[in-house]
Length: 112
Ligand SMILES: [Zn+2]
Image (tube, rainbow, N blue to C red; front, side, top):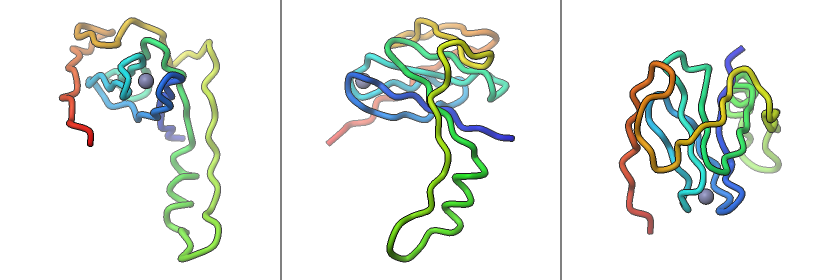
């Protein structure tokens, strides 16, 4: 089963999807995260709270998106504090090595 990981920043309420080998940071810069090369294990930093959902549930909801009315729910969850696939590390604003990954900072896009 494929799962997608994201993180929530409790300071700015951003929810950011993790990407492989590219550190992604929330709007305020207090939370960050990155997938390792295997696309399963992840490292989060700062105040990031990891979230997950089942890919199949999201795709079902997308494929069955109604024209009007209520959308289809899909299951999301807060990843436990202790989890085999998520490690708490120091990432916010940092570049370096995590596992076998050479991390690259995501280019900062201008926000309007
Ligand atoms: Zn933030």
